[in-house]
Image (cartoon, rainbow, N blue to C red; front, side):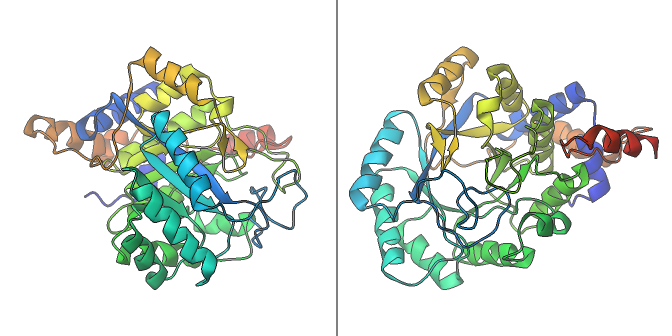
Length: 365
């Protein structure tokens, strides 16, 4: 397993786009079935009222958004939602609750019942419930949880610009607790929050240094919601999403790169390039927790047009690599192959009125 440096990851990210997609596609085909994409469904089992102050999240109690809050769903409600998701091709159900951390109470006991219910349906079960202790993670694992999602969001340096109610170390500690419980780890981030390219690459560097690396890495584009501190952020360009997917694929060849929030602003052509660059999963359904998402039938039509097939549950992410592919991976991962004179060290992505001036100033340095 290659130990990347920040400079190497920046070199990869700033590679000319078509060359980058080609390199990423080569790595993807060496480690995954390029014709398979997992369809996952994200279900909000408890919405709103969160005490955190994540600048991107409409579920924070302190922000004035149009989110309708609801109490923790029942077993029957979740079973019905899971059956519908499975019928539309989903092999993974991720249940999210707007909590800062998990409490050892009756609601957590109900979550364990929800996990058991979905697990009995032969679906991968993922949860994102906030911070968990090692003991709570083990209880989730015993109930049949397959994966736990806890995103790093961005770099450690930029993190304090996004949230103040918890620290970066809290995120890493939760991931450590999850791994100790022998659960698979799902952790990625969001781009388009005003961060620099270096912040994106630092986040990938941190994820790549986890041992073992996350089995899943979701890449989200910010969906700016009115009433949140980031409501005026401009949509991230599709080219940046493609770059981020491709860079993630090269840096972590065995992980499933999940094309997550923000797909409503992407064309099918843009998404196709993301699949070519290494995205191996999408979230289906009309909502991702509380933000809009493409219609499930539109996704199935896109799969038909691209010749993609939904991946079955519990399929190992990384296939054995044939001997003949070894030189390809060695070339794709070799740092010297990514070096080129005059590469861009950093590109500012704060899509505000001052964004162009900042990007111009960075280029002139």
